[in-house]
Length: 235
Ligand SMILES: [Zn+2]
Image (cartoon, rainbow, N blue to C red; front, top):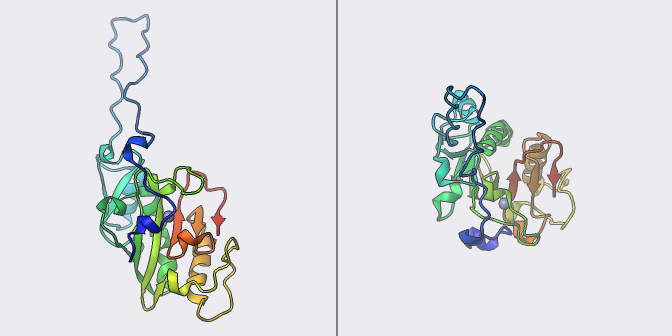
């Protein structure tokens, strides 16, 4: 199988050209008041994921084996986590060579956890993914920053359990640019399309791209969470 990055639209660009979205190095000067003898409040501490974010704690309360990662190692990820066990009863297995690609933002892990019951309904216990975080990733044609750059997108290639669905083989007839839902009537296409449409209906992800989107997505579903949950883009 080809190295996922070669097949994917969001080519990884060189780190030197990646715009840094890390926190500012300096904070604004402290305001001096008339009560000069009162010591100024200490500068706020640098953001740290130590102890875990609210998102992480919520996942852990729900039994997910998710660990906080040092923010300094993943400056473009708001809340970097390592997923070490199932999310919502489904295991996510990264198939690739770079460990960094298995890292994700906690908000994505939370959406995957909530997607668990949907996947289980289809008899799925394990998902093979090709990457979540890809530092500096950009969308090939537009050049805009990809959701992968902040660990908020994941590319799912295969679904295993009672069934084995492979996006490349089981998506069925591809109609570029057409919405993949509602699912077609053809039996062969049905399970994977039904799954895509069930995930879309659940409103857990704001961007869902399938092989219908373009040739770069012929072998995976791209699921992405965004800051705005007002709309869903599905192709
Ligand atoms: Zn993707």
